Image (cartoon, rainbow, N blue to C red; front, side, top):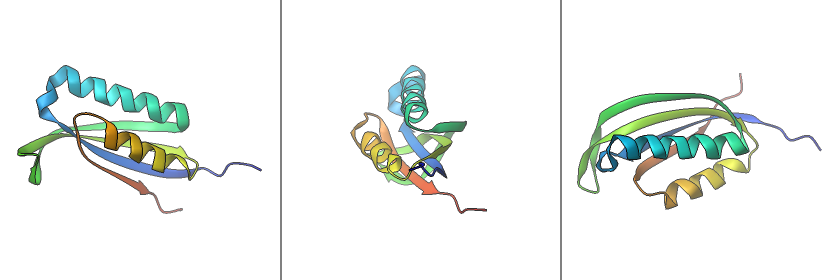
Length: 99
């Protein structure tokens, strides 16, 4: 049985309270997690942006976009890891439409 891989993108918002080194370590951690379970295509750091509404009394966050290809099981595991990671304010994982 061949594993069918689909294209996904994930945006994460990281707390600025972590500082520059903390933010970079969270990004590196998730680059590693995604690389081990999927084909990481790109990482686009959007940087510090204003949030649409306050999250945990914070009005700004550091945005990062990951593009990757993986099997259908991995996004649930990635979401679970996002939820237990310190400093991650919000995440979104989207399956891209097939061209």
